[in-house]
Image 1 (cartoon, helix red, strand yellow):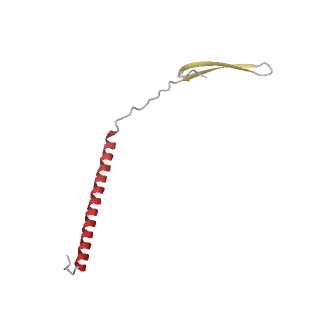
Image 2 (cartoon, rainbow, N blue to C red):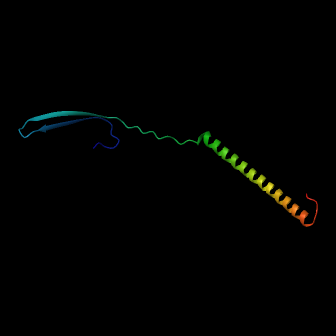
Length: 95
């Protein structure tokens, strides 16, 4: 096992012998390349995040305005219903 962060060349000599005494030798040349790890640097988030946040805020504002308008319409309908009830109850002309 090579040492940590090892790179470069190495030579391995090996041999084999059978039961009859026959021997064979060999040489293995090994080249280990350096492993370069690049770690990306964090960014500020880019303009895409800002645009998305702006879009979400605009949608929330539009929803709030829509709810306020619906509440106003509901109040107007309630007022008309009350007016019709009073007109019916006290025999006033319809409003």
